[in-house]
Amino acid sequence: MSLELMIDRSIPTHVPESMIRDWPFQFGTTHTGNPYVDLVDPVHASYPDVFYTRDAYPGAQPAWVVRRFEDVSAIYKDNVNFINMGFAPFAMLTGEDWHLVPAEMDPPDHGRYRAMIFPLFTPKAVRGLEDKVAAYASHYINQFKDRGSCEFMGEFAFEFPIKVILDLIGLPQDMVSQFMAWETDLLHGHDLETIAAATKNVVAYLRSEIGDRKRKPREDLLTFGVNAEVDGVKMSDNEVLGFAFNLFIGGLDTVSTNLGLQFWHLATHAGDQAKLRSNPDLIGDAIEEMLRGYAAVSTFRTVANKVAIKGATMMPGDKVIMSTTLAGRDPAAWDGPAEIRLDRKPQHVSFATGPHLCLGLHLARRELNVAISQFLKEIPQFRLAPGKEVEFHLGMIQPLELPLVW
Image (cartoon, rainbow, N blue to C red):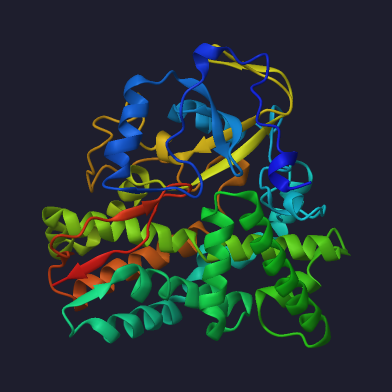
């Protein structure tokens, strides 16, 4: 039986027809234009606070959607009624029982495993990477700064941050093209067969690399995972795989996505770009505001207990999509949510919040800051290439290409 036939896409009886809406951010689809204006703003304008959709979860499976910032924040912090285990489809699609470590873990295990990993990504640890991050950014900028143009996604966004994380994980730089092909299928694939095939390829590769670290330890995160102990006990083979897979999907796409969105904004908003050029101290605040206004990530929770939110009754086993994209533009939470105000200093949820606050947020912020700072120093006022419309992935909102000129 195919994976598609195994999926139950029927609408549960506890979901009223009146709460069902179309979901504009289906995995494996794209949109040309401004997805935030064209797709996000209409959801806030006409959809109920909580709605149900037939095709939100990977593989076009149904799920609840909460669009309000306050509800997304509350669910992130509620580990009793909403659990992380099983939120990602990867292991299920391969018929295995490993899980992402620590992303798919719930209390009390989550706290214990997170504490083991946390020292790797503290602000102090990230400061130790400053020179390497800056050197990589300069290397790629130097490749095109005198040319007067670049395809930003291919020549910078998918190179600079990935170079850093591959060094940290201990994976070869000459396999970037293959890694990105797998990553695209994992995070932007629409059909389950495609996602499953990419998962199998990544799992096989990571298992081989983990086996190599057991034989020949190195100074990298894979070796750390092999040797790490929680309460005096080493992680199991499946836990090491889940740790490595979590690093792989988190490290190879998220910063690249945010780079693309933030440089798209700066390329199409000359005044904001000029403001940052004349006030570089504002870059840190500007990044936070753009993380709010151009939030890209959707993750999932599974309902553990019957719970009511804004007139919706959610039952055990239901999936809930956690759209930071909707939360970041909630008009009930932000004054003028569609406006990017570089000095707003928002308390956004683009890195999640609560117990599952993103472990890599300090590194992500550092990479975004270095990229913008050095780009503005080395490259004159840049803009989107004339006559070009940007096409975006929609499962996680990401520019496919971003042609810039100066």
